[in-house]
Amino acid sequence: MDPEYQNHNVVSLESPENDIPDIKGDEMHGIKSLASQIGPERMFWSCIWLLGMAYGVSIFVGATSSSTWSRYATILGHLATVLALWTRAKSVDMKNMASISSMYLFLWKLFYVEYLLLPIVR
Image (cartoon, rainbow, N blue to C red; front, side):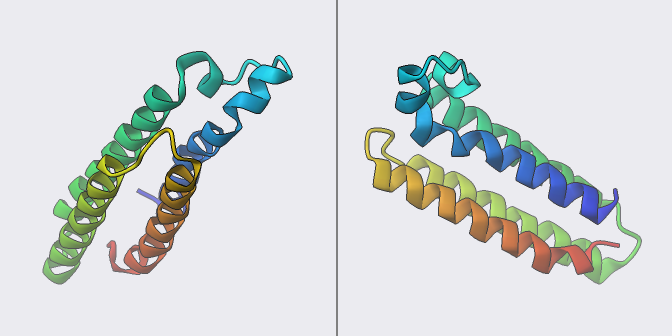
């Protein structure tokens, strides 16, 4: 898997979660965003599941590496990242905008961690 392609997937999975804080404004202006149609909690968990699956694919790609050190570093790095994602996601209060915004910023931190892991994938 091309590492650059993998990064674009992570960004595209983070983008829908960015719509969650804008649901009230979307509804006020008649904008039919996916987040306003399915609701904030369902949208949030859909994004978390999709991102978790992307990390699962990264773990699988790491497991197929021909380099032993790359295999272990990729698997362990992505396992740590997906565990951090799930742990943090469970603590988000969907009624608290500060909690949602904090999670969104945390997703960007995971995005930067992915940049650190990319050179290891072989």
